[in-house]
Amino acid sequence: MDNRKHNILFHTHTVSGIVISVVLYIIFFAGSFSFFRDDIINWERNESTKVSENISFDINQAIDTVQTTKNLYGSDVTFVKHGYERRVNVSISATKDTLAATENKTRDFFYLDTQNFSQHNYISSYSLGEFLYRLHFLAQIKYPIGYYLAGFTAFFFLFAIITGVLIHWKKIISNFYVFRPFAKLKAMWTDAHTALGMIGLPFQFVYAVTGAFFMIKLLLVAPNVMVIYNGNQQELYKDLGYTPTDYTFHQQKREKVVDYNLYLKELEKEWPSFNVTKILIQNFGDTNEHITFEGHSDRSLKFNGFGKITYKATNHKVIYQKKPEETTSYLESVKNILYRIHFGDYGGYLLKIISFLLGITSCFVIISGVMIWLVARDKKNVPEKRKRFNKKVVIVYLAICLSMYPITALSFIAVKVFATQMSQSFIYAFYFIGWLLFTLFFIVKKDIYFTNKWTLKLGSYIGLCIPIVNGICTGNWFWNTLQNQQYQLFFIDVFWICLSLTTLWVGSKLKK
Image 1 (cartoon, rainbow, N blue to C red):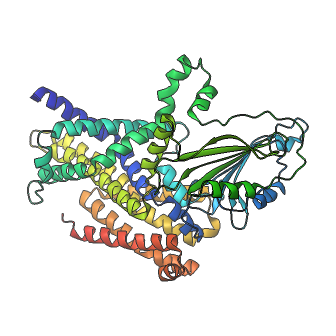
Image 2 (cartoon, rainbow, N blue to C red):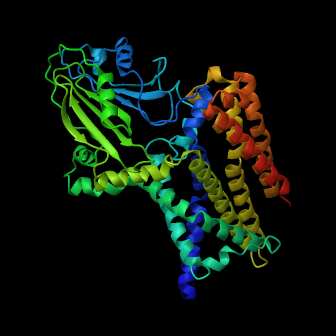
Image 3 (tube, helix red, strand yellow):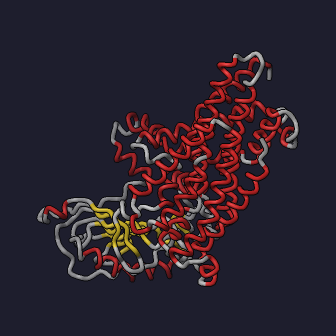
């Protein structure tokens, strides 16, 4: 590669990296904690549940409980289990019965506890785990702006990865083994940036591709909607498998009572290693009622074993089935594989911990890239005014990014101390106002070394208090949760102890 091409790629890599750096750091930091989303939610609610995606609760009782507050006749009722939680998502469509009361002609959505069958709305059920998960794709910004911002950030990150590899291609092996901590500041940051960037390269590439796919896929398929489907968006969704087959509503109530648990038991016998993650009841209570079960085979047996079966409720006849051992279509394979490798939920805690460490490593790669940018411009030929401006930019950048650690740790304490006031508005206010205050404090200090050291130390001190506060507030001391086999509660406490001790050690080793 000649010097001209190298310089073009180098400057393109630098500019694209600097432009997206703050947003990218937020995505990776929040995304790293999102690997433990279900554990955080259960820890916050003091609930422990079986680590399984399979729907195994009493469906009949769930239906009866829901019917005490809403007439389901003519509606489509959907139960979806997204993770390892006690609560499942319940969606109820507007009834198709033309003679129904007005209140039944509206949609409804809530969470249903599968043990005590209590109902919870979205606002009151909002949790810190959900907040961090949604923060990693900027869902708190008005839809669809946040989604598209996260998607294009991932897309430009992919661009930065490719240009970075091309820049270092000739010396990619030799540079990997080079680290000069006692050399010039720029050399130290460059070595750390290159080595850690190479270690996390496969991880970062996967998340750049899948992140861009999830967030901006609608923009990518928009031309197909206009050309191939003549603007019919619903037809596209149907071909992609997002819209279920519609069955005609007969406006006649069925006479027999349907035992939904019986269908589930039969399916468990027929497909013994199958996890049901979604149950769809269409035309509830009608003579043309249909029941669909969707899910996947055990990940340890088959990584991409999608399955689906539909029954007609009045005669128990199978209308459609796709067995999990059958070959999955190309479309389903792509969708499922992208979801699985992005969420990293197929390898247990070991994969989640490795993914978390790689995510935090990616945060360091982003910071080191910014520091390289600053040190490279601290030269004699650069005007003093420009130097001061560059330093101010980095001070603001580091204050925003590094403040995420202490405010995240503090939020874990807040959800325990203020558990009775917990809601979506409380989490939003506490996290964002606290983040702003930390950021302003470190900006006013105008000291990069101070920001680095004390964000680590504050986060560490607060993080070490999390298991103590949890034990005082709930009585769930981590040795008790281990003894009671409440592993999700135990994991979060021990996770914070290990993380805090590590960052405290790193902070103590920092030198001006």
